[in-house]
Length: 635
Image 1 (cartoon, rainbow, N blue to C red):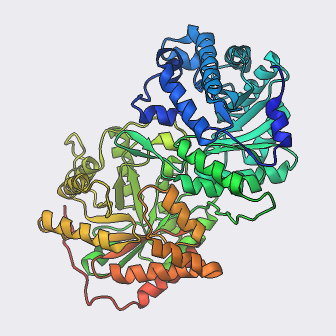
Image 2 (cartoon, rainbow, N blue to C red):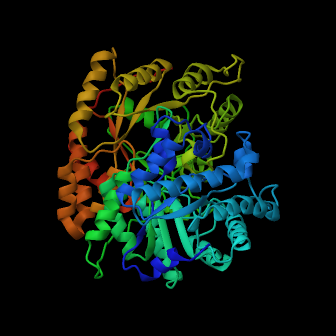
């Protein structure tokens, strides 16, 4: 390393440096499968890699990262390329250098070093010294080829990132190192370390810049940055968020956060102490361009941002009865049913969960919906949560039952366990892919799609036989729900899936949150016209907004949520009364939903069960139609 131009810039620049976005995102968009070795493209398709580098430079990146995220011996071995570590890394640096020279711009080249793709002891079989040697092999090739700095990124394990930093210092004590960790949705690493422990660990290991990358969208990374900066105010920080929480669509991972949304957060990152700003999965040159413009046009004096969304959790319960369940009976009687969603706790503490359930029950909720590993995050078993709520609070529950991650043996065993615990309302869903959650390498297979599981329950278990037709001794009495998107991007596919679920025997339907009723009602009318005798009870999703920032977060970072501009404007104009305005909007929507729905599926944001209780109490005072459409429980 000839000099430390990167560190000099960090010290002298009055604004944060801007790095590039995700090479992999653009490679995939241009037809390169995720099954391919992206790093090998440095040798086999250098023009494609070079074109992406140039796009990021033209967008305003002051630093570009080499296409070497997976160019270590362990990962390359999956493609039979383990003997080309030095060649692939050197080619990547030379490729980046040529693009920089051709741009006639002063752009730094960062050697990108990703995780090894293996677990280190004591959580795996690879010893620390082995990991250090593998890191050293890649890092030596990058430094010898002439990178200006190293960015060690997307690490989930403090043990591993320490070995990577150690390898860098071993090869060249003077090379600038940005060391970056990724966090789960609960603001902890995959192994449970909190932001402050991570920041101190990276600093003690000898990194020049403490980084946060990947993780969720900009909001989460800002929250983590503030914690780290408060603990280590003299340290330098780097932030490179994903473009929101990903969604799997048509076999591809999609990211919802727009470039304009990133522009707002670029200023917030700067204000919160970031010296280096960039992007990770889902970010494109358009995101970098908007961030560059936002940073360059902002006056240097201090400014406030007010971005302070916090992520909290929800809970749920269970009860033991025989056919029909209370929920089924209320729907058959034409009652307007109020279901409220709660998430299981991450640890052992259930006091808040039970207190929230009690508040909701007292307010008049009919049933508590307990999620199972929402967003593929590790949580307490929802079976236990349902049992606790039904036993301690006395309100019936709905068990969310994902098919993903379960083979036929486990599916059937879990169903029997739920019924034995008195949990008989079941909401069948596919479940979130593990690739977006706490354990991206966890088994993601499934033997049944939702319609298949509904058929197994309604036509198998409820008839007294298992999937193989073997007698289970006594029929179960499950009341089964399915999911529906009332504003689908592909209406034909959504109709086809709904028809399968109804033919399999689904008893009720839950939808995602709705803020614009016109397209939802229009699609519902189409359902009624194309599905003969459609009378299945529909509980429409309601998620009360609490602030303008919350509305923006949902719009840009949560797949499938569309909030009309007039609602954004109304929440923004409410100022300090935004939460109350959100409650008012939710109730206004519910009043209209009562004309076509048999109930609501209420999702309290940020564990604000007090807001949910206020809405429920208003609903109970609402003069509903004389009697909602009755139905006959199928199966």
